[in-house]
Image (cartoon, rainbow, N blue to C red; front, side, top):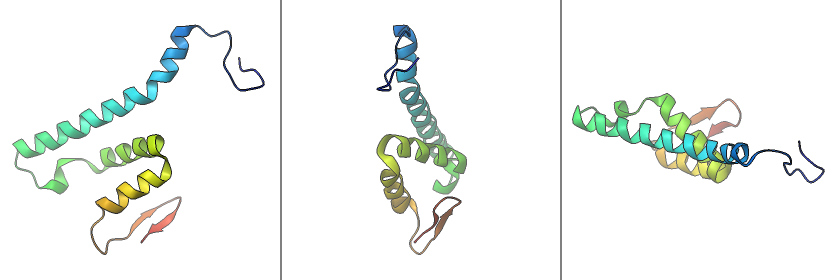
Length: 96
């Protein structure tokens, strides 16, 4: 399937388009879910911490990490954390 240079050969254009559309579609789906949770929380007068499930926040950060590399995800985490809060991850240890 792949030649020496890592390019794909002998695949239909439909398969190539499908491969190229997976990441954007997943990202769009996550963004739509995130904003729908925020709108639902605003309608129900929920506190900001309860609007979006923590697992959805992590999935959005994962998408940010894929699109903008780890540095982009770390910048987003740094802006979202509260002053004095330390966030830990299983891979990197602690963000101070």
